[in-house]
Length: 175
Image 1 (cartoon, rainbow, N blue to C red):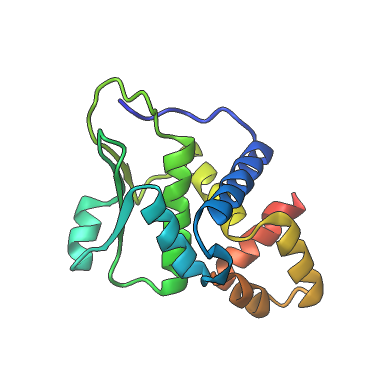
Image 2: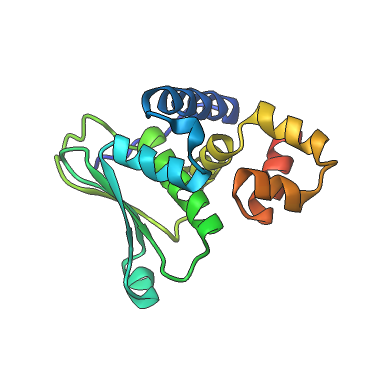
């Protein structure tokens, strides 16, 4: 069906996210000069993907698709028109998590693969962990926690994510 179950640990996801982040930072010209949002968009473009904001929330709720991967490996990330830029950053990174962790690159059926927004379970938990690690690398997150004395607002602002995402990352690292 084009989807595969990722069998690694959360530590493996951390390593994969860091490796992909490092590679994209090297391969995308001037990557360190971009904001997080710009870097995410440049990363999607570099990987031959696109980002679309759906015209109405109703379409988003009915369709539910956040990531569509086409047989030629191009992909589209679909965003809700009602979410904030900080939430969109997490959604983009989450969908990249599905792309790297759960897509069967052999795709034996040669069909488009859709990862829906409203799922739950191991696929979603793993994609969330990937997004957190990709947006808030562990070593930098630990430095910012110390520098900002665990102030979630300042940490979230630094990484251009919501305070909820920063709080979850703090919990993940503490596990």
